[in-house]
Length: 317
Image (cartoon, rainbow, N blue to C red; front, side):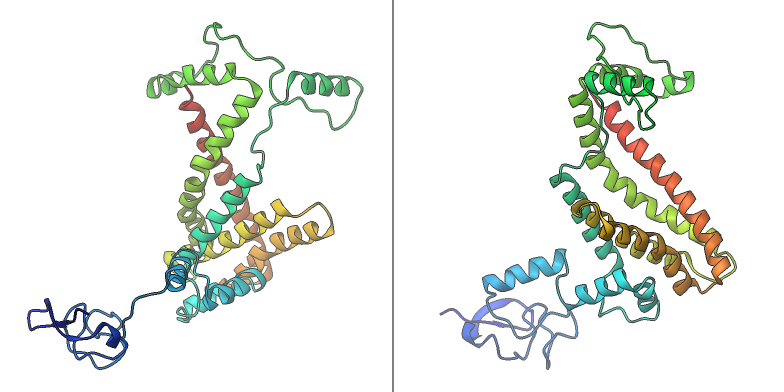
């Protein structure tokens, strides 16, 4: 069996350390060659007790790196889901090693949410067929309150000239946009739904992630004079939006009923409770800030989703 050791120039040469002896602490780090005396190298941080990893260790490393499925995950989720604002306070207090990093937690839960949406075939936008539109028109004539006609009743013919009118500045900025919109109008209802669905899953995750700095900016403005740094607001934004991904994912899987209503109530109560715990204002001070924050974020979210869907339509050929 071949042996290796480190010389003064830190190069590997055949010599003294048996492969079977890798569990023993060597005198020099096998990565950088520095002298070691414990379980980790003080220079590069590599473990000193090395062995060939098993398949189970490879799987554990993969899952731990991308999903962080260890004790830290359960502690993080427990505080995130059932103690509004507690996870943010723990991080601000310096107790960070025991919890999943905020950005990793947000990204992991957002990926799971959008994957769940995709695999459950959730409709993003539904276009009525001609039969559905006619049925709603009849219902409207009969005075039924829930009648609303959504979408066109007929598709446009392929040879129909351009009918979309855009403002002149927009026409100059995006000269091909009008043609893309006209082409989208000529698609069938099923094709339109597929285009919008594909656009949503392509752009919406990026749009929602880009809203995090804006959400934090709203908090910064709402809590001017409190001495809070912008990074603290970003931390709060990551945690609260990660919670929202979990709740919305539960809505997709849960049937209509009391439990779903209870989750909706918890979703409404969570943000002001978290704001009160983290920022410490009075109930009235928290209430009006929560109202403005929800309004601003909802508007920003709607604009971001419209832009994401518009990008999909604009690239339709």
